[in-house]
Amino acid sequence: MKSILKKLWKQSPAWSRSLFLRLLCRLRLSERKEGKESVADAPVYIFGCFQAGGGLSRSAELYAEQFEKTHPHCIRVDTSREA
Image (tube, rainbow, N blue to C red):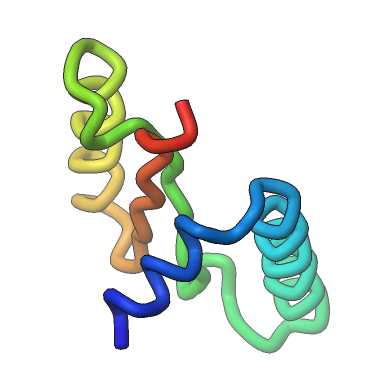
């Protein structure tokens, strides 16, 4: 199932991915404002060129690794293909 979703995500136009991410962020913010979850429980999305190779890739990985040590809910979003 995960591979199907990943394939659909990569094949969708950039504007639809952007719209989806903006809507997702708004929903998450509205949940926080309503007090449905604490900020500590909310996932943190880390966008980076994780598979691009080179300095940007390594920098994104180091940042994500350090952040994951202190935050339990980290989600890495690889933007290598978009760069």
